[in-house]
Amino acid sequence: MRILEGRWKLVILFHLFGGAVLRFSELERSIPGISQKMLIQQLRQMEADGIVRRIVHHQVPPKVEYCLTEWGQALCPALDALLTWAINKPDTDPAPSPDP
Amino acid sequence: MRILEGRWKLVILFHLFGGAVLRFSELERSIPGISQKMLIQQLRQMEADGIVRRIVHHQVPPKVEYCLTEWGQALCPALDALLTWAINKPDTDPAPSPDP
DNA sequence: CCGTATCCGGGGCGATACTG
DNA sequence: CAGTATCGCCCCGGATACGG
Image 1 (cartoon, rainbow over the protein chains, first blue to last red):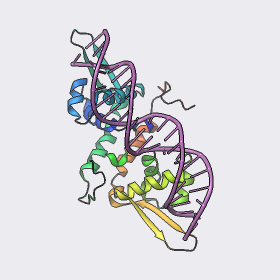
Image 2 (cartoon, rainbow over the protein chains, first blue to last red; image 1 turned 45 degrees about the vertical axis):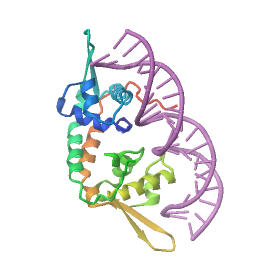
Image 3 (tube, rainbow over the protein chains, first blue to last red; image 1 turned 60 degrees about the horizontal axis):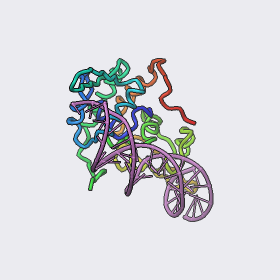
Image 4 (cartoon, each protein chain N blue to C red; image 1 turned 90 degrees about the vertical axis):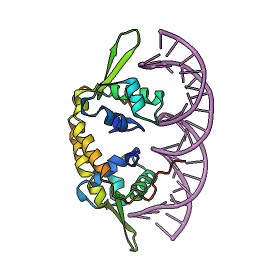
């Protein structure tokens, strides 16, 4: 379970959801608040944990893509369920995380 | 998503899984590494987020029970999927988190 | 374009002791 | 039994600058 810990892990996973293959910069742009450091860090951790695959294309303009591994794909149902749950949040929204 | 962040949130949820109603001490004993502080803290946060309900029985020996709210129950499918995924972890276990 | 390196502050997390 | 209080470390996470 420790694998899913981290501020951005789930968010990144959601973007890789469904077998998407995204470049570094695409991920960066897709996730507004994230910094390069965090993105690369969380990606590397997930790579080490074997749920994300890193594909390097040796080109003059560097190009690196990320996608889910097989085991990562196995997370999809869970991710999906989580998503379904999240969007069904009832209106009861006191103010759990006011960001100043 | 921030709701599920935290070292122990998921673990606690797994113990409340399936509509279980547990006392504070039961949870404490069920989760080996946790401290009282962490248990109460995470519990309170989840309560504030509306996924855990707190039931106080006013007795001479205090008795407080915790269970999932309706919205918390809605997490069960996701939790289940997560669990299924976790136990299907392939043998590929390099050494992601060596704890010294 | 895709990273790595470094600095830094806040708070998550833990251990311990005390209360009703 | 079920918390509250306090202290402190560590490391997560953000900003910035630099390298291939």
